[in-house]
Length: 96
Image (cartoon, rainbow, N blue to C red; front, top):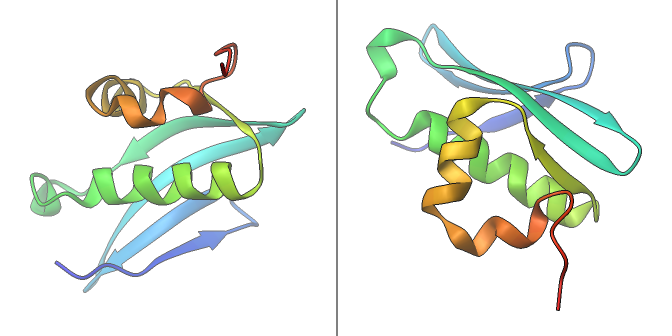
């Protein structure tokens, strides 16, 4: 599935639109951190990697902006746990 992900700055979220459906990942930028607070994928799109694509996009933005990640959303926290290459982005993580 080829997704186009955009940032909706007015609503503080990343959006992936597929047909007439929209998946979202809400965030808050504050004090050099990005809090990823809520992921929502329509039932019809679940299991297709849409949520993971949103998280990967957000992590790339965090890295580009030299921010730290605060995964307030359980889906995001689980994603980072399963993909340790992103652990260095976590707030409170000491880079060696």
